[in-house]
Amino acid sequence: MQCQLERYNFSTGSEKESPVTTSTFNRIPVQDEVLILGGGVAGCAASIALARKGRRVTLIEREPTPRHKVCGEFLSGEALEDLHALGIDVASLGAVPIDYVRLAAAGRAAEAPLPFPAASLTRKALDTALVAEAIDAGVRVERGRSVQALGRTASGLWQATLNDGVIFAASTAFLATGKHDLRGHARPEDPQRWVAFKMYFRLAPAQAAELGRASELMLYPGGYGGIQPVEGSIANLCCVVQQRDLARVGHRWEGLLAKMQQNCPHLAMRLAGAEPLLAKPISVTHIPYGYIRPTTENGLYCIGDQAAVIPSFTGDGISIALHTARCAVAACLTGEPAPLFQAKLRSALLAQMRLAEFAADGLNNSFARAVLPFCLRVWPGVMRVTAKLTRVAQNAAVAPVQLPSGI
Ligand SMILES: Cc1cc2nc3c(=O)[nH]c(=O)nc-3n(C[C@H](O)[C@H](O)[C@H](O)COP(=O)(O)OP(=O)(O)OC[C@H]3O[C@@H](n4cnc5c(N)ncnc54)[C@H](O)[C@@H]3O)c2cc1C
Image (cartoon, rainbow, N blue to C red; front, side, top):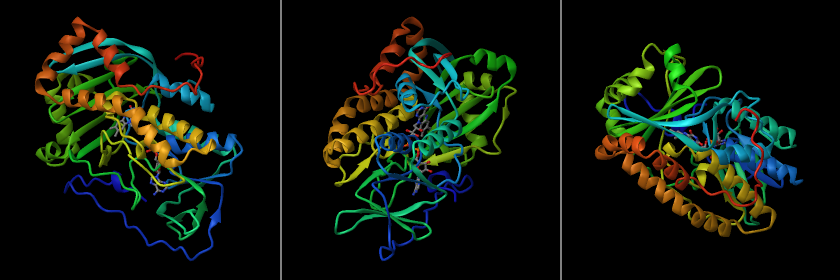
């Protein structure tokens, strides 16, 4: 089943609602200690950590096998540390080390070295490795089954009703459905109505060599995009645009791509002679950038994009997913009530989130687009400072680790 957010209709610009069946609380539930809803980065990370602490965990993931997700696939230093601690060796999965960030706008480009180790890896490879690690850790993984309703019994158990009518219950649940909201637990509307796309390209050899080990951020009116190498000698182009700007190009990917290249000659140069590798781009809508969940109910820990949604240009969403999973597991194991955990998480994330939002607004400003590459050229430290300030600080729970070789 295609998810609600990845069903943007290119010809009409409309989104379809997922049909949600009514819950069937009269059936006998399958009971476990912890229930994790969603088997992406946050859900898998939490399930691995809990299972390793001896908890009996069931994880429910709607996709039968990992698949491409809309994501720039940039792994920041913090994400690499957390993945390493979970036993994921990104280098052995083919991750490409990323050493530079290059900013291109208004016909100018400038680059700066990244102030932390970073890498890129396709989500398909990362999610596959995380699910395998969860199974290895003893997590009961239910794949190809989606949660349709999440409710609480009078005795305080969390009950998830799946699409086949089966009910799973536990006293503790982790909400980790990423960009997809469950009815009754939805995040607010996305007032700017962002639409995000991802497409893989095989770049012309000279362009692939010039891209090198850099993550390139490109600014254009109405949004921004990033291009970077991923494993398999291909490049990921991931971009966001507001729906009103997409409407101006007839809600068509070809029109959007042409417009982005017209507004950003650097992108046109990169894509000259490139071969698209997917029949059509994958897309998502409803991205409430800047959202931080203010509260939750007892026994329900919200993690990943269900906890906070940082502007994509920071390349820090995966890191936040891992960070929130780790903190929520620690809270759950020490018996910290979920509402208290969620409130503390919110205040810990607030400053970085607001700064990232402020920077994102700046990227969308025509004056900033004109002067940013120039600023970066005369003061490369600006990128270093921005990168540091918009990164979510890791707490001391994770000791510094040796990064995998080659990264
Ligand atoms: C345009 C864009 C670019 C980005 N680029 C980057 C980047 O370069 N680097 C970075 O670090 N972050 C990036 N991010 C952010 C990053 O993708 C997310 O923050 C991260 O994936 C969140 O992890 P998660 O576990 O919360 O969600 P996900 O990894 O999306 O996992 C959620 C899982 O829940 C499952 N699910 C959903 N609904 C149900 C249901 N009802 N029942 C069962 N299962 C369900 C889904 O199938 C999915 O597998 C980007 C985001 C966007 C929009």
